[in-house]
Image (tube, rainbow, N blue to C red):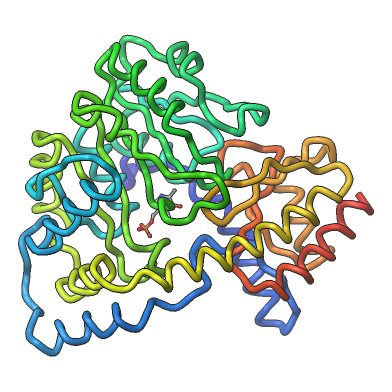
Length: 388
Ligand SMILES: *Cc1c(COP(=O)(O)O)cnc(C)c1O
């Protein structure tokens, strides 16, 4: 007898794990490893947010809350989406979930049946395809082009559609490429989705982390009709350095919001009660720490851009958001997992192989780490590229 369900047995475990466990083993041996592997901010949560959670905890906010979150938080999220993102979602359309990862999973599970197709532009965030497969639906990948800034075009979207297409996943700012879609680009994609009533899952977790001229736009703000096809997903992990708190949210058309609430009522129930009060403080409190973090990421980004552009046989597209470089290693003639393993064993530099993102000739370097580590790591990375 097979113990594990077929859909789950077929999921691939994260390819990043072997690299991170090897990096950890080396560190424990006392080896100086430079890590570009971080998928989370290297900052602590701002103090006023922690204080709000502590106060709530001390004040007795220790019981179950409404499944989709306490009403003051849902009202604030609704207000934030209206004022900052220009999309109108009522508080009843908001569901607070255990991290934006859970939000994405809930949304896919609430909308996709076995046999449905979900269009995923590649390179993609590593969990999307496995979540789609976990519910028995099928990921349909569209390889985006570097010369298009790693962004799917309306034509490519249109060509990938079939009678079974249910949803497209858009992630802007993007992990792992750093691409940020312009409003015009989103309008064109939205028009294609509207032509066949395709749902849009818009993962906006890096919304606050954009640089230079780039501006974040929410696809749900294109029009009320587009909003009625869009599940907007965001959270607190990246902007407020709250990855361990596990709070994300979905804003969805009413029937989908209801389905997510029902699904969540039978699975996780509410997000940790006092963590929700921390989230309220994050939305209502001073935003200067967020701005300071982004300014620091930008210093690192510009330093890395200059260094990476000077290294032979690799190339990058300037990231406009998030905190990653996707480095194209195709000219080195070696695939990503092999490259990452050699980079770690020869130079003691940890990086995530592009295979994790559906792009096997690239490597992801995170700059959610200090400038001295970045400098040391890039010296080693450059030495490695020049030798091989
Ligand atoms: C980090 C990340 C998430 C999940 O964030 P959590 O709130 O920590 O679950 C979702 N999407 C992308 C693209 C991410 O990089």
